[in-house]
Image (tube, rainbow, N blue to C red; front, side, top):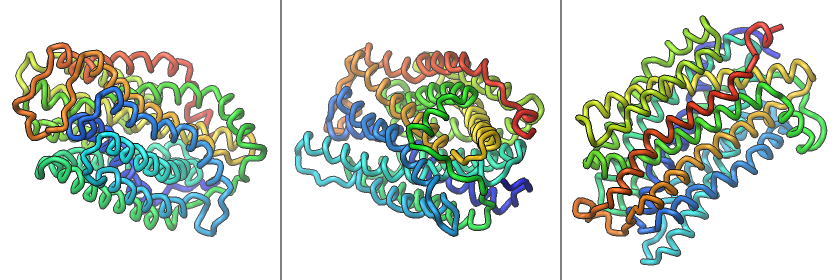
Length: 443
């Protein structure tokens, strides 16, 4: 395994892949549910199912993708070729989600979005799994992985801000479905930037030489499931992904029905991600001083407090809502830095112990869990809307004259604040048993 520190060029090159992962991880959760309920007129319960099913498919597919990339033989390394192949397919299929012909049939619209989103999720699996697997093979240094993840998360935060702020703005610049079609093309272009940047930027990155894992995929998954520290870390990360997914899904609804300002979605995103751009290095520095696990807990608690403050939205000045959202961004930066820096540690400990490379299987399971959490978030939020009696419409131009029952507005607010806060707090319970530190990883 390589031991030297990575060059800045390699760190930045690897981090550029987060333009793709951050964009795809953010934009569907932000705009797809409102697109289905408020533009196509699909009921909230069915819309939530359409958003969930493709991501559920990824849960099954990701470990398989990891196994395939583990066994890829290519002079460029086992992971890099997949970045380009799957990444370009990801961009093309994303644009197709919003490019369906307007035939006046809600059934056709629902099927079109479901099929194209499944294709898009499939491409994403074969990009994300090898991408996340690479750090464990690029360096064996405990601290170097934290530095590598600092670059990745900083670029991730920038990608989330750019894509999350621009997607609603581009959509709102046009009427109805046209706005979503143009937005789809713009976001596809961002995905291409991340894909090509990561592929070219990692061409000089070191590649580990640990032998691929033996046995069937089932055998490999059994070994991964038995890795206690990985299992505990994954549980925490998945539950937090669910919480983040619910908050992303709620942005458009909060801006429209609680803040009564359609353009507020863009400002909420800037407030959310701006602090992350500035404070990611600070969280990284804290992790080096107190340990990654303690830093992870601290950042999670910051997010919990901030999310609870958002429960006052609609009853306090809007400026305070934006301030609370910014505090959420502070915590969010940390809950991205630390688990992504801890994952390669768990993978490396397994490789050192067994002499076999299961990085693809580990990250396949990891990304499957993340995908499940991010998919369940909008599904849970859609379920809350259904319980609250949310009224869908296929006449988005009439949004200023529409009304929602008070129960729906309450569901919108709770799904954006209290529910995510409780989920993040509960996610810390399994993390108490996590034991990997620098001494354990590097011995």
